[in-house]
Amino acid sequence: MIKVFIATSRHIGKLCDEWAHANTPTGFEIVDDMADSDIILSIMYEKIIPSNYTRTKKCFNFHPGVLPAYKGSGTFSWVLINQESKAGVTLHLMDEGIDTGDIIEIREFLIAKGDTAITLFQKGEETIFRMFKGWYADLLIG
Image 1 (cartoon, helix red, strand yellow):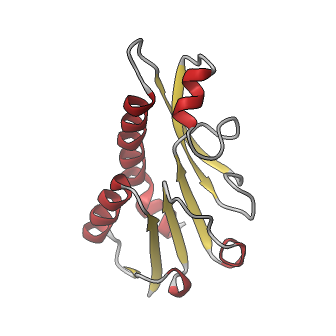
Image 2 (image 1 turned 90 degrees about the vertical axis):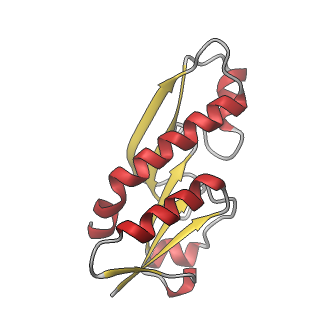
């Protein structure tokens, strides 16, 4: 049995976790201990995954921002400050850096005239949830 840990501390991550519990392929199980996992899926997780895990496990991150330009937190505020026309989210393979690693997919969405950091954050969460559901089985199976 291949063990999967879903690292999250946000509402959208909890939705992804609930969805994953109902849709995990045969041969995989979701575990509650990162150390006991073979695969880690990070969904807007507020902590840095230790490098000993990123070196020894498959680790994927659903990041609320377009990488590599918008690393870290507060990315939706920064796209507004920088007067961008689009924002987005990135799915990437994690390595020892912060918000680095091979990019698997970027999904962008237009910034509307009345958008705020909060509305962009909500659009980002919705996009991550759709992206998570679309990629979940493929990430596990490889």
